[in-house]
Image 1 (tube, rainbow, N blue to C red):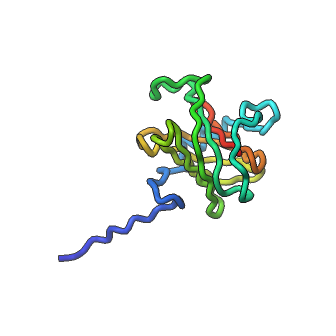
Image 2 (cartoon, rainbow, N blue to C red):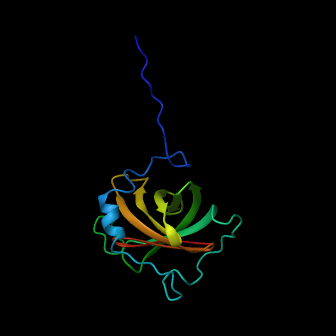
Image 3 (tube, rainbow, N blue to C red):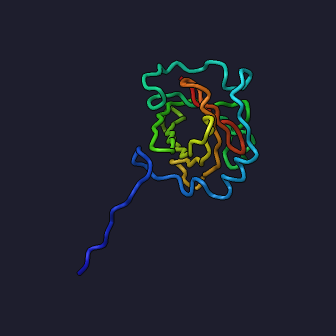
Length: 159
């Protein structure tokens, strides 16, 4: 009787399910249409979080997202923000952003490649409902602000 190799290699530093194909054709096509300037009038420019910055980038953050007009997410609308906690970790040219909402009952993970100028290109997976996956593009504006969007809304991070 032979024993099967059951080791699972996980890319993300959180030990959760990985984001499947974080740089697939859908992500690349979406990223080509998105510009996040990090402007002072961006919806994420106003301070809405109070998580103190301890490390230059990694560590605890606050998150918020709105559902835009995504028909697959019941009750979501552009004016309804879901806030939660987040943690950011870097690994080489990858940034991993794990976040929650609904008082910690729901979780998501973003895996993104860090490009020049602080641009982030990757994909989001809803860890509570893994069939929900979306391209995500972000910008590290500074060490207290990461602007982000997906095809149906915003997914931002603040300290």
